[in-house]
Image (cartoon, rainbow, N blue to C red; front, side, top):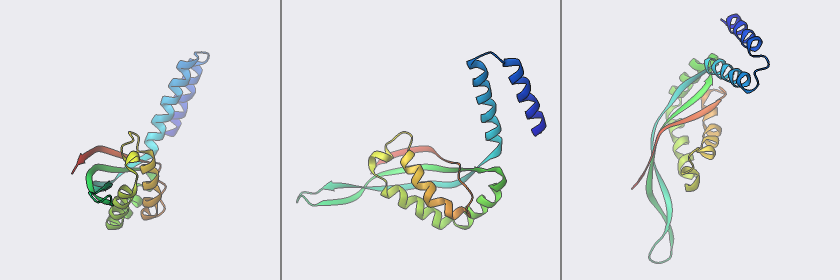
Length: 151
């Protein structure tokens, strides 16, 4: 299979030599397809997280209370060769994994939770969840079907 990809890549390079941006776009697409085949996606669960937000009470005291709910599905993209190991570790450590994800969400500033890309949250989640996946490298985390609801 890898030999066929190599031959196809060489043919594409040979046929598109001198084509400028079209050739580089095609090579980028081929690289993406190869990378996608080398990665596997595992589910880390569905999360419903009540998020506290500070507010000022009637006596000017700052207090917190759950003011919104953050819901999402979380997936980890890992190298295909580690798929079964990562999945088994995620299942074995489900409780700890859920605790860490919920804690990370609740401690993330509101502006980071409202960010469309959720970069800060994803970085924090990678740091907290990777040790629970038996050291399997997480290439990327995907947060799917994200919803934010007021409480």
